[in-house]
Image (tube, rainbow, N blue to C red; front, top):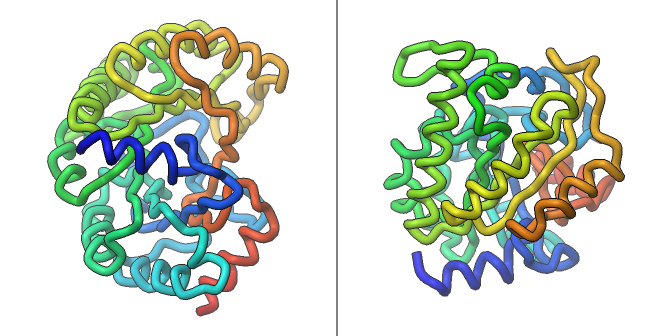
Length: 288
């Protein structure tokens, strides 16, 4: 990747600095399988009006995803604003071969669109060459801890190359791969954002350590996200808005902080934060 790629992402991707009032994205839910289990993750529920990671009304095939992009690009409104094709679930995109097939199909027909992907990072060192091959522009990695002991409270199991690891060992493996994957991605010229879910009482002390580490490895931006209490952490407290902002302020001198995140669905479409309009657009797309 070149400097021109970085410029393209920073001007066109609404999560990396592009104009969120003009630049939209389409998320394609082609990746159902996941290779880790997080204590805060629940992909089982779907309400048309909820916006949270992992939620999708249905999983689609790569060919269906291509049809969705065609429909969006031919739409009177969406065709003017869609700049980015993203794959963010509902599982981990790197654990699904459909991710790469989808990108290849869309690149052949819509080479002007940018590609982005969100991952837990476990398979990132193994898949970095494939991501470069499909011309990925930007990458988001969710890193919630650098300490395996803390990670063991967040990640219930890690499945890598047919081996299931739990506890500190599983968390250590995941963290090692996340950091190495980030290094390789930045080295390859991808624009990298790191998401960190702020879980009060669990990983508060990890956030500044993560900020320092990822900045040193070449990440461009950090997105500190509030915990959505659900699954095993259903009774946990979400961070108050003022506390969340104070953590962002405390770390923005280390690495840039993204404040526009709406914790989007895996099948989101349109402008970030467009609410009911976005839902309407998604329903129009599914009915097409």
